[in-house]
Image (cartoon, rainbow, N blue to C red; front, side, top):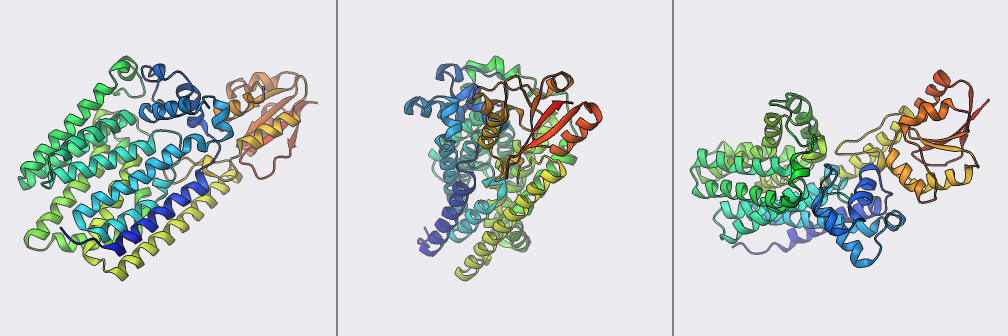
Length: 485
């Protein structure tokens, strides 16, 4: 066993602390958005027994919702209003899971390529917006990433000749990853397929056993859903739609991989160059490099292929956990290059790259407001803007509302708008009621995230109304009063 590299450990710890500090500062107390509101309202503040046996649709990320539900039960703050007033009441669970993901990424890469490579992998993952944008969400993605990374580590350890207990841990972590998100069917299938391909190519018995271990993890995860099988298998969103949906390969996969590449570009380019040089050489090192390239490449690509074959309709965030695979591969490939000085330089470059990415994405989100665009991808989304202030909307509407006024959520995030207004006792119509409300005679207060579009619709469809903008400084939303002439 190699001696501990205290310097590499210090660098990795600093990178991890910086990443979690960033998440705390920018996302730790952010107001809840559409899917978070639905998760808390429908699955977290209900009785725990119901949350464990009821699966109405895919927004129920069971493992994380059960953890949040149990925590609120324990603390006594089991109301939507409590979470809306202090989102960190639940965000800390996801942030803790994200810290655990960084730890397991360290363990994974350290075992394969050493502590300097592991430090670069932690820095690469910690600087990735595809990781940090999900690190504090009150949903299942952070817990899913932790379970998937733990599965990667333990399965790789077992396949490389480690103790059999790693296989048992891989089954537990893999089952929990599936319980966190049913879409991790593709991740576990990809792991099994990757080790199966490695067994065919390199004839390693442990790779065959690792492939079977991944299948056992998937089966165990399926058993965890036993109380809600009817809801899970009968849900139209998770059902197959025939076979071979080509859009997954020509649109979803390139879009996701491009975002991973943008996040990890400096480390990934360095790693790819060194990895190719190593794999082309003779001897055991080259053979091991080729096997690793096959394992990580297949784990990264097979989830898209499996989804393509199954012909479901995945959104990009189904594959968000694969950013861990990309970051780990970047660290492993760069291992022969990493002297102490080069490690520091690489980590600083990744830190600067992460800061530059944050600035660029935030500028893009800010510009979306002027363009009436709604961004929601792996690197950024409308609800990650500092101006996403639901309490500001709630206060503005409460002050402006007069007796007889109708309140309408016009478009963007109608669920969050309605939920926060409900805390002030204000009923809010959904967008599909817009024509009825604006075609009537009562004054209408409209909350919209696309003010330009709203004003165009008013001039074209409801010219009989006078529209007045209500002051709401530095907010992603705009509030209008539309009064009859």
